[in-house]
Image 1 (cartoon, rainbow, N blue to C red):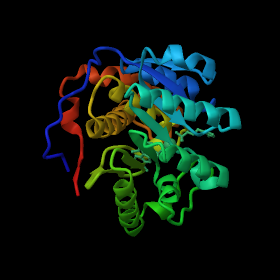
Image 2: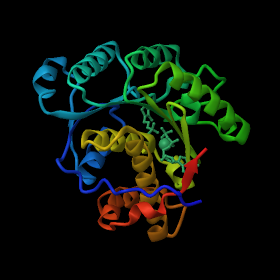
Image 3: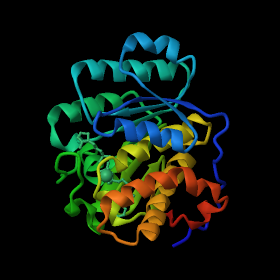
Image 4: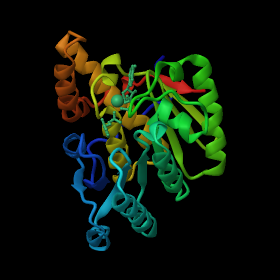
Length: 275
Ligand SMILES: Nc1ncnc2c1ncn2[C@@H]1O[C@H](COP(=O)(O)OP(=O)(O)O)[C@@H](O)[C@H]1O
Ligand SMILES: Cc1ncsc1CCOP(=O)(O)O
Ligand SMILES: [Mg+2]
């Protein structure tokens, strides 16, 4: 279903925001390029000695827990503190949180700092809500994606949102659930192939941090970043015309990050609605 709400495109991003990313080394390069492709400037650093100078320029922050270490956790917390001092928006991506106790502890510590956006796939977000989760490693499980599981997740996220009214929650999957204060939105773009190569959730996190960094408001940043990425995937499939060619779809989805925004009415294809 097309949205009844009319979206204004956030592109071109002016001024181009500097996005500080602490992320995982699996998809680090893809994340940096994705920020560039949509018009932001990425910087990847975990050395806390950089931070006080760097944050004079930073517009948005991405904290992705995909590769943890004690040093990294310290850097993540310090980055969030620097950002908070300067009112810089922060995205936390709970990669793999369903799979280890330490990730869950770190995720809860980061959540307690009230980031602007907290995201993960549906299995990861179930873990954050203390619901049973079947996530395996960094991937979501089908059992967590059915209608009753999604309803349960919606309730869980609404409860989290009551405790964290300044945080917008995003659970990605075949449909994407967005909960902000008492508002609930279900987004319906996307193609199955986006679940079959690594880094798709990471890129969505980076796009949200970039839109936030350019001054787009919280809910619009989340709705438009997810939808933009998914529409890039849809366009990629249209071009590749073979859903088994996952690597080609990956490459074309990334191409579309810089191309789709040239169509000034791309946002008219966003599907979903407020629940
Ligand atoms: N089965 C699916 N069908 C359509 N889109 C999907 C599907 N799975 C994931 N996506 C899309 O891929 C992006 C990343 O989501 P997801 O794979 O859940 O995150 P992660 O990579 O963190 O596990 C989101 O934009 C989401 O909408
Ligand atoms: C495979 C893997 N292992 C640690 S981080 C990572 C990448 C996860 O990317 P995404 O959460 O976007 O699927
Ligand atoms: Mg993925």
